[in-house]
Amino acid sequence: MGQPMEILRDLPAFTAWRRALPSSARVGFVPTMGNLHEGHLALVTAAQSASDRVVVSIFVNPLQFTDAADLARYPRTETADLAALAAAGVDAVFLPSVDGLFPDSRPSVGIAPGSLAEPWEGAARPGHFAGMATIVAKLFHLVVPTVAVFGQKDFQQLRIVQAMVRDLDFPVEILAEPTHRAADGLALSSRNRFLSPAERDRAPLLQQQLRRTAAQLRAGELAEPVRIEPVLIESVLSEARQSLRAAGFEVDYFALCDVDTLLPTVQIERAVLLAAARLGAVRLLDNLLL
Ligand code: PAF
Image (cartoon, rainbow, N blue to C red):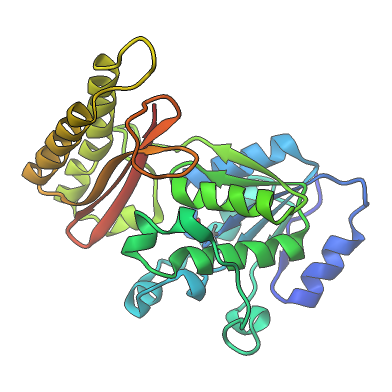
């Protein structure tokens, strides 16, 4: 039987716990905003396989919300989250308050996430990625992880964190964990709970459409180089957007992008399909690596 899970809310208590770990300990870190589901627990399992001690943070980060109502209604389920993390064998949970992390309510210095943060989610939610990268940088300084695990579901977030770590030489390895899905293919997300039963039935169509589009793009692929005509790509993507609209989705974007730059591409080698579409009040995100 291991040690009981530490629940640390204030910063000095957390840093004291962290400093008391042996310097040889490999520390795995999973940053979260709580309302944990199987997808988060899979990140914990990945962290456990890559380290000796696992820290999970739960912090609903106000810096990355562009809408106060969205921040207010973000689901907070601390008791259930702590029970799930204890059952998963996590070593410590860090649950700072906003005041504890930012005594002046907001930091005056932050991370500028650069061009990767401009398109797609960055265009839909200006400032979101700067707020996300700033809190992740701060948590990395406090947790001092050997490895940190991020889900591929938030593909643009993952790419920005990888770029931040590379460009600013954070001494941490980033592990990318494949998206966890419900049995019908819907990517797990804390926001799925806001889908009505009818919307929940329709939601897996987003993933099905990504698969169909990927198959169409692959079928149009030429042997050498792996490049298909831009006009073919545009017609396949536009057909995908139309079928989602016909199924009741409001499509924000459905695009074929280069995995490194996240800009639209006509090469399907090293490409990812990125999609965001709204069903009622819920914005669903998903992606598929080609
Ligand atoms: O993906 C999330 O839950 C958040 O963006 C993160 C990485 C915990 C930063 O607040």
